[in-house]
Length: 178
Image 1 (cartoon, rainbow, N blue to C red):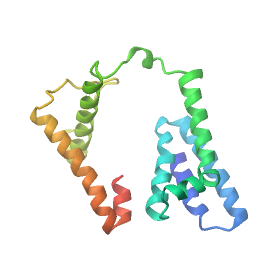
Image 2: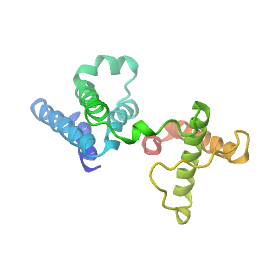
Image 3: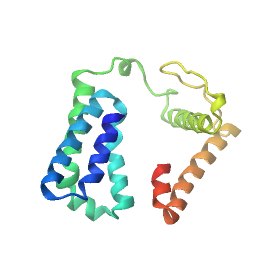
Image 4: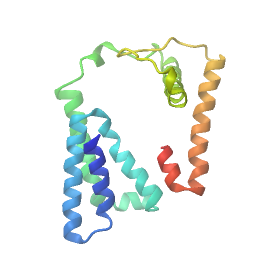
């Protein structure tokens, strides 16, 4: 997390500096990103965070992303592809071979992920209700049209709507909600 944060901060500072310092910040940002993905798997989301930052605060749109790809994003893309190659081919996670979809079918898998999202959001809202769950935990399947599923869908829709609504009032708050 520290490496990912350092890489993101250096990326943000990279815009407001002179040419020579900018190249060094870019190199160090890529170095910290490399260390972030190889020290913690969650670091792989940093390029998405950077794309979101550019969308929110720099006002980039799709043509801007494509025109600035080589300068801003190519290094992160190469590091991400290299990391995925190492993670999936050279040193594969042995649990991937034994674990299929979380519910045996794609629909049940998506519903289970939605339920896990609901559990995580409720844990943030009601932290005294948090319990330790074992690795490879799969919550029991719930009926597709049960009240828990509708609550999970409602929470997801409210989350997406809150990001969309706050975007027009405060881009910082909307970015924070991401």
